[in-house]
Figure 1 (cartoon, rainbow, N blue to C red):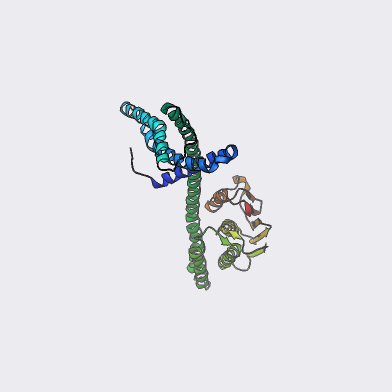
Figure 2 (tube, one colour):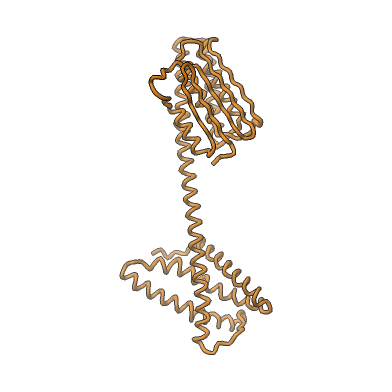
Length: 347
């Protein structure tokens, strides 16, 4: 058994004692207003005693009382000691207060036993109040701890998803630069320069929980410009956006997976005239993001198989928002990803 004195727990019991005193004073202010000041001092003197005693009871005595034979015997002895302290002890504390002129006797007890029984009733009320208060306080603290663990777990999972998404995004970009370098393209130096800008953004701007939508638009434009270096003028890319407030907060790199998917699994596999059509609308904190691209995937192969970028995005949305929709539709010659987020529904 740990007998160390816990100052923080004692402060909690001081709070319980304050509430108990307030409850008593409220009752006496209503029912005995003519002796309120005197009774207030009396209750303050008694409440100090029962606060310390209840702290010992609930924090040390009861935890010691476990289902072990030796401890049961010792625990019973301790309970008997507490009963004496709650009755005769409180009566003696009252007499000490009277001798120090702190406690004013408002009634004379016909016998010691009568006075002790009166003090025991006071103690029983305090035990009930402190017991209920401790239970409620413990329940609230448990809920808070559970909530904190849930938040920490979600944050850890979000960090893990970001740690997967960022290297995946970088790997695909490096593959594009490798293709340009292998072909000894004059665009290779420019692609490296643009990649450095994206890396700078990923290193210094995405560490926080949010960024402004304006920054997300900038990284999307930089990524589009980098990807277009691989293609000739046959690739048509349109990016339309209307945002009421460019300073609105958005988790970093939340939209980029849909754009990346359009390039990697769409136009790169299109033999005809490839295109990508991107539309972003943010109005009254409602975000609509649609990415449509050319595609030549075979519909007979079954439904859409989500890659790591899409699956991670879907999981991030589950952790971040309560009101959202993400749908991907494979057509005969196109692929459409639609994302809706109610930005006010952030968890």
